[in-house]
Length: 146
Image 1 (spheres, helix red, strand yellow):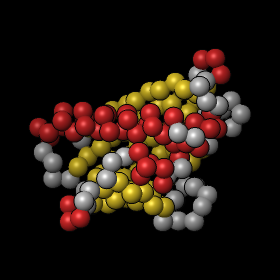
Image 2 (cartoon, rainbow, N blue to C red):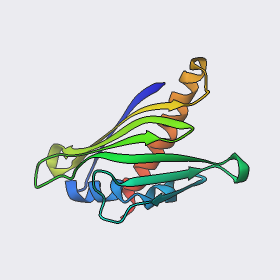
Image 3 (cartoon, rainbow, N blue to C red):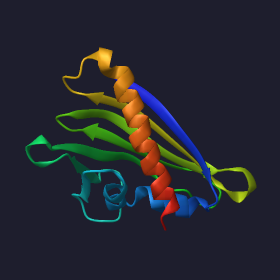
Image 4 (cartoon, one colour):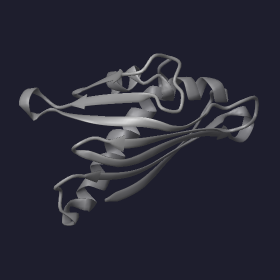
């Protein structure tokens, strides 16, 4: 199991940073070899089910997630979304927090606990480095694209 945190400060209002990070199918546009679908009707709410399918052909797996906390930002109040990972391969949780930053910018904090079933703990440093890299690039791309 690995834990990591990413932080970004961006020249966006809170609601726009939130929108860019929580339009779930957009994640499939920025994470290689991944397609993201939402299995419940919009809008996102507690109980929304999301599936990220990653891989190629028979080497693919589903990262099933459920939104367990959904508190969009309101005016200058921070927003928080928590996803519980419920897949056969990927377990853990992720939190996306958007809060006011300096100079009217948005501060994004992405926290994650990640476990890959059957991956022994000696691989944790490699998993942490890979996850920070993949999710870091994904967060950057999501925040840059309107």
